[in-house]
Amino acid sequence: MINFVMPDLYPASAEIFILIMACVVLLVDLFAGAGQRWAAYLLTQLTLAGCFAITFFTLDGQVVLTFGSMFIDDLFADLLKLALYIAVTVVLIYGRTYLAVRNLDRGEYYLLVLFATLGMMVMISANSFLSLYLGLELLALSLYALVAIDRDSARATEAAMKYFVLGAMASGMLLYGMSMIYGATGTLDIFEVGQRLATGGGKTVLVFGLVFLVAGLAFKLGVVPFHMWIPDVYHGAPTAVTLFIGSATKLAAFAMAMRLLVMGLFDLSEHWQSMLMILAALSIALGNLAAIAQTNLKRMLAYSAISHMGFMLLGLLSGVVGGDPRYTLNAYSSAMFYVVSYVLMSLGAFGMILLLSRAGFEAERLEDFKGLNKRSPWFAAVMMILMFSMAGMPFFIGFFAKFAVLQAVVAAGYLWLAVFAVMFSLVGAFYYLRVVKLMYFDAPTDDSPIEAPTDMRFLLSGNGLAVALIGAMPEKVMEYCIYASYPFYAYLAAR
Image 1 (cartoon, rainbow, N blue to C red):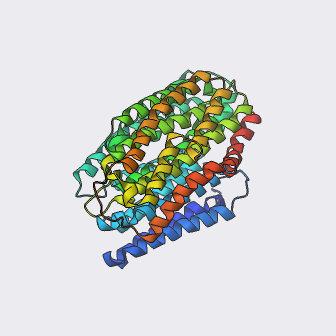
Image 2: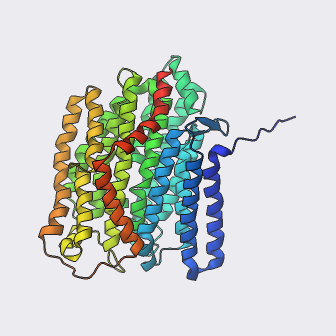
Image 3: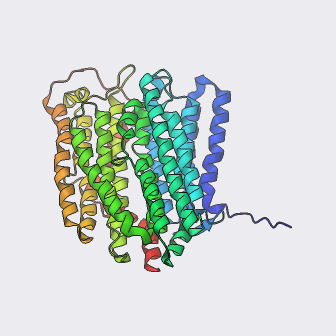
């Protein structure tokens, strides 16, 4: 007789809710028809609001495992999910008008966004190679379709094909690395992998698998030398989709790195730390240098994203100092603060592109921002705040994000790496300040008024002000990042 044990569904209630609502959105769109597309948009926003409420009111700081220990609910997962819901909500508001004028605001768009969000939620709470890979593939397959959602655009189709082919190769490397680690440890449970590694034993196969795992992880983060897809996908995809890929997905990729490397493979840190060091240095250098040559703002922000993810890796690798857990809390909280800060800045930057875009016109060239101060002094100021923050200028959130990471790097004893990062940050400041120069010192090429819905104008203004105000008072956000990182500190301290 087989005894069936019902898993505890309470920790995964938000995931279950979004899955049910995704099916509801599909049915409503099917029966409502093209004339009621607002219904799918409204339901999607209500779904995200419901997920936020569920996660917020079930946030208790306890570590709970369910579904055969494949799913973990802890403070790290809850706070990242809350940030994810906010980011996806902002993405939908920014992109609604853009999609509507191009006849892309179809039900399948909102359905794919919900499934991609579900995949990211599963990745954030994954405690098994199996659940992590399922969440990753759900996200990836949804993104492939989103990039190609404009079926009349050859550029979007080409970008989707490149993304699919390279993504399939990266998934294969990641899966092969996971299989090698499973063969060496005999378990798919990430926490159990860490426990078995702590007992010692041969690590040749583990290191071999680690190389493939880090390669697959680097592709998902979009860091050098696995960055080839980033500029083409950012440029080729509809801007509303680029906004989604360039912001919300970074939270899930960061969670994936933390779960795999810190929770599972910390005893191999002497190997993956050197790998991340090389990836971070190359990403910061190439990302900033290549961005200078770009005349397309989306491609410029793509290379900017590469350099920013390199900075995030600096925080991740700085938590490993002779296996001493005292360094982990500062380093990992700094890395999380950097990711959250980057997502906030990225939302605003791509939101500005969407604000200036209209039917038949993509405001993605640098020239499209010429003279913006004469057209709209307020939104020129918002864009200036965003560019200053991305450049790491005081006293915006981007400055404190970089400062926190560099502080962790210096504390870990890598002064040369901190100096290297600062030097290339100065190089990167050029292409951000170039946008400010175009807005304030060049004559406008387009005198048409900026037309955008009130909710987008209001939210974009709030986005810019948040970058400035959180930069003036970063302590609260940093405090939440410390709370979120504490489960990893407690895990390592107890070893």
